[in-house]
Length: 158
Image (cartoon, rainbow, N blue to C red; front, side):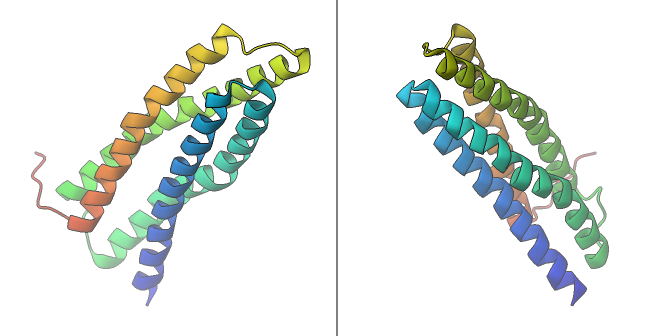
């Protein structure tokens, strides 16, 4: 019974990570396309809150549920598909952590522009391009993790 609850928690965590990430990306891109500092500031503010509440919580709990689930089932963490999943999880984190900081900066730059009644500064657009580019490897890594978790292929790493 514990195994089923751990599996459910792990799947919900993965769903929250992927779904929140996709939703945040969609709304940030749509707000950016308007070039309206007030709208971008509002959306980016909501995105920062959502990332804190949903993504960060799920990102912390995901390895915990994964470890407990693997232990409950009897899987060794050095098993190829698990080790590769963990590596991809680290890759995702390496791209996600800077994105969190970038989202905060984008929000702050948009707020400042809106308060001053000015257009978005060049720094906003530079950061946005980095934010956008970092999404691709992060999402690709998450899709790879989903594939590994669903198929559990035999992989020899060493």
